Image (cartoon, rainbow, N blue to C red):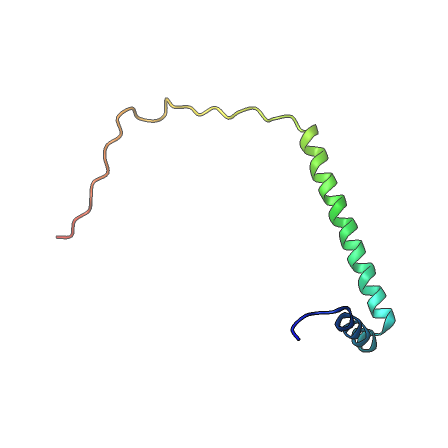
Length: 79
Protein backbone atom coordinates (compact mmCIF):
# COMPACT_ATOMS: atom_id res chain seq x y z
CA UNK A 1 0.00 0.00 0.00
CA UNK A 2 2.19 3.13 -0.03
CA UNK A 3 4.41 1.91 -2.82
CA UNK A 4 4.28 3.53 -6.23
CA UNK A 5 4.08 0.99 -9.02
CA UNK A 6 4.08 1.31 -12.79
CA UNK A 7 0.28 1.06 -12.78
CA UNK A 8 0.01 4.20 -10.66
CA UNK A 9 2.10 6.14 -13.18
CA UNK A 10 0.06 4.79 -16.09
CA UNK A 11 -3.18 5.93 -14.46
CA UNK A 12 -1.70 9.36 -13.74
CA UNK A 13 -0.50 9.62 -17.34
CA UNK A 14 -3.95 8.72 -18.70
CA UNK A 15 -5.61 11.32 -16.46
CA UNK A 16 -3.14 14.00 -17.58
CA UNK A 17 -3.77 13.11 -21.23
CA UNK A 18 -7.54 13.34 -20.69
CA UNK A 19 -7.32 16.69 -18.90
CA UNK A 20 -4.86 18.49 -21.14
CA UNK A 21 -5.20 16.67 -24.42
CA UNK A 22 -2.47 15.35 -26.62
CA UNK A 23 -1.64 18.72 -28.19
CA UNK A 24 -0.95 20.45 -24.87
CA UNK A 25 1.29 17.65 -23.61
CA UNK A 26 3.39 17.60 -26.78
CA UNK A 27 3.58 21.42 -26.72
CA UNK A 28 4.72 21.31 -23.10
CA UNK A 29 7.40 18.73 -23.87
CA UNK A 30 8.60 20.85 -26.81
CA UNK A 31 8.92 23.85 -24.49
CA UNK A 32 10.89 21.76 -22.01
CA UNK A 33 13.24 20.64 -24.80
CA UNK A 34 13.75 24.26 -25.94
CA UNK A 35 14.54 25.25 -22.37
CA UNK A 36 17.13 22.49 -22.02
CA UNK A 37 18.77 23.46 -25.34
CA UNK A 38 18.84 27.10 -24.32
CA UNK A 39 20.39 26.21 -20.97
CA UNK A 40 23.11 24.10 -22.61
CA UNK A 41 23.83 26.89 -25.11
CA UNK A 42 24.10 29.42 -22.29
CA UNK A 43 26.48 27.19 -20.35
CA UNK A 44 28.67 26.76 -23.44
CA UNK A 45 28.73 30.53 -24.04
CA UNK A 46 29.73 31.19 -20.43
CA UNK A 47 32.75 28.91 -20.68
CA UNK A 48 34.04 30.27 -24.00
CA UNK A 49 34.51 34.00 -23.16
CA UNK A 50 36.17 33.22 -19.83
CA UNK A 51 39.08 31.53 -21.62
CA UNK A 52 39.31 34.31 -24.22
CA UNK A 53 39.33 37.17 -21.71
CA UNK A 54 42.63 38.52 -20.53
CA UNK A 55 42.89 39.62 -16.92
CA UNK A 56 42.43 43.34 -16.38
CA UNK A 57 45.24 45.49 -15.06
CA UNK A 58 45.28 45.49 -11.27
CA UNK A 59 44.06 48.66 -9.61
CA UNK A 60 46.67 50.74 -7.82
CA UNK A 61 45.63 52.27 -4.53
CA UNK A 62 47.30 55.56 -3.70
CA UNK A 63 48.21 55.37 -0.03
CA UNK A 64 49.76 58.84 0.16
CA UNK A 65 46.30 60.38 0.56
CA UNK A 66 45.70 58.41 3.75
CA UNK A 67 47.06 59.63 7.07
CA UNK A 68 49.72 57.56 8.73
CA UNK A 69 48.31 57.88 12.27
CA UNK A 70 44.52 58.03 12.11
CA UNK A 71 42.80 59.38 15.21
CA UNK A 72 40.78 56.82 17.18
CA UNK A 73 37.03 57.27 17.03
CA UNK A 74 35.55 59.01 20.06
CA UNK A 75 32.47 57.64 21.74
CA UNK A 76 29.54 60.03 21.94
CA UNK A 77 28.07 60.67 25.36
CA UNK A 78 24.72 62.19 26.23
CA UNK A 79 24.79 65.14 28.62
